[in-house]
Length: 192
Image (cartoon, rainbow, N blue to C red; front, side, top):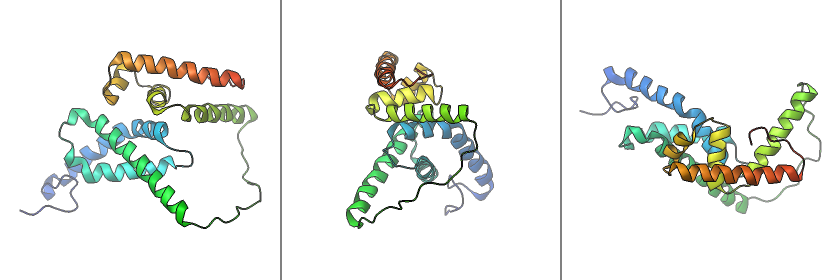
């Protein structure tokens, strides 16, 4: 019997709808978490939405390779980290082959219609996120999973395949390092 190419699980056409629905539900349940992993590992200038789409494509095309359904988050984490690294390698290769052209000197004329208080809060959050991106991935990833995704230490430990005490230590160190950075430039960090 040949596989149905439109079926995400390669099952018979009758089971196609339920398999696709299960796959869609699994992606919806993990999409935000994957985005947090991408933010933790992405390099400056990498587009998180593009990376998220790369992970989604890999998820759909490789979901049959997942041997243990209880280990879906570590498997997705590996796919996400690989997507970040592959994109970074492509960017380096592209830059080597491009000629450098002067950038437009014109200012960005987009109007931000948010209130000044919201603009200031958004700027502070972006600054703290930028400071967090400078942390080593061992500290950045658990911190972002905790602050952005709201995962517990146990959930982070399970997802990263680490002992819970290691996650606790890394979170404490990450917060301490980030707090020191924000104190240097007087940026309040609510999550810390």
